[in-house]
Length: 94
Image (cartoon, rainbow, N blue to C red; front, side, top):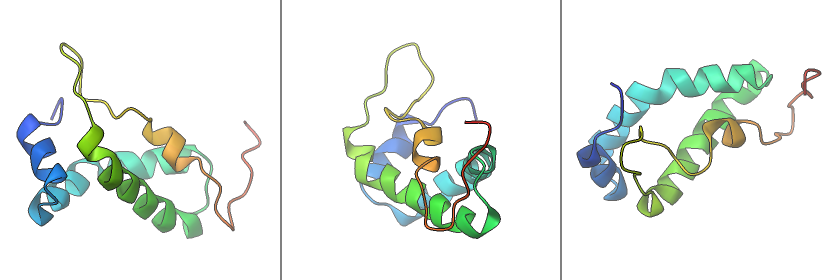
């Protein structure tokens, strides 16, 4: 899937449970990858994963698709995934 369909985005904004299952199914592995790349430990992965999708759900209604560009969220997933959690270890590469 090259970009998220406008129909799926509308359904997410309408809080359609099946749309959210589809969205997590499509993007969940990518989000997990970004979280691991941010240097968070596995104990924090589930919390940050959930926090990411909560943030998307809170902001999806203000999402604006830009013509000619792939679907993008205004705030990058890396920004959401890099927020500190209680047991997060600092990333020495930062």
